[in-house]
Image 1 (cartoon, rainbow, N blue to C red):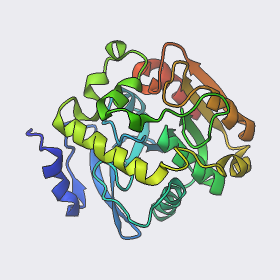
Image 2 (image 1 turned 180 degrees about the vertical axis):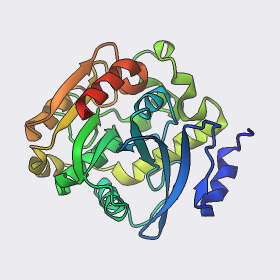
Image 3 (image 1 turned 45 degrees about the vertical axis):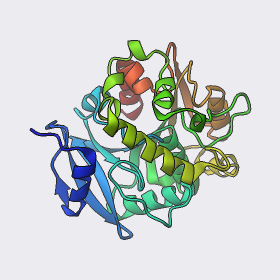
Length: 283
């Protein structure tokens, strides 16, 4: 199967269902209309639906942890408006708007209450959704979420870094991360283009205050009884581990699992442990 360059494949959005673009039979893409926006959604697997909200560099692709969870769960991975293959919605100007957009998506697709995983900025989106209406979720996993300003340390100002350096610091040890070279389609001009477009959209949504919402800790208290699992790498250079305590302070039911020798991406840095923790929590 010939893999089309991203900017060529991007032209096919009008097609309601597009074939998997990486040749994998495990997933497909569909386009869902939400308030006039054509939301591109990756869907794969079988079983109870599991919403996956990707991070600030876009959708990194279908990886081993996806395949593992897809054996027992239907993964639903929307590509946020303005990221990857979904066009920007001009009215979405911050992360809370994005959370409202996905709340509408869940209602219109009859998916709530749903289990969900949010990664980094995607975790922030999920937290905003929980703060507005925790009943949207059955259980929630937040992987090193942004959104809350840590009392110790700071969220990395990754705009001071070039895109590839930004990607590099998201893991503790790139050489020891088996799928590092496969992230975002693999190293090359298309990967660089994807990363820069995603960073531009992240800057548009969350430049100031930088990657957090001062009101979120005050609002998350309504989700204090929502079953929540926080997953964090001890060597996370993007969102410091200290932020976990701030989440636990307002989400009193949240438990924390910390992975040693791991940075901001436990799903690819320690995929077996990651999958084991997620499956155990959602069971």
